[in-house]
Amino acid sequence: MLECGDTFLTGDAEDEDYHLWIVLTPPKEGEVVTVSVTTRRKRSETLVLLQPGDHPFIVHESVIAYAYARIRAVDDVENALLNGTAKKREAAGRELLRRARAGLLDSEFTPNGVLHYYKEVMGVE
Image (tube, rainbow, N blue to C red; front, side):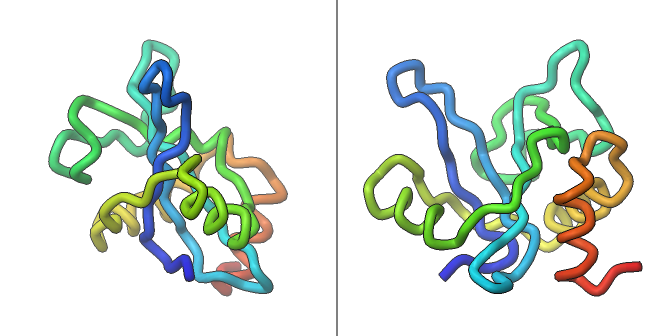
């Protein structure tokens, strides 16, 4: 069962272009909110800037791309982990999880549906 702070990789195995996803909420009615970590680019949103050491997968400057935040079915993620299309990684530490959650609330790029769902699940006004 997925839990807050769990992380997993999805992407293209041929290109070895994987993205780290962080689970921000506990499962509610079979769904969780996830955010994507990606390499920092010139036009990246830098609200939450990550450095090597913030998570074992992060080896160069990265950001959380809130425009790609999603509500995901727990069953879909768990099936992807079982069939190998996703790979489980080390859990996010308490500070990374805190920063990722705060950024979701502050980012102007967080999709409205994701933001409202997150607030409902987490009891945030």
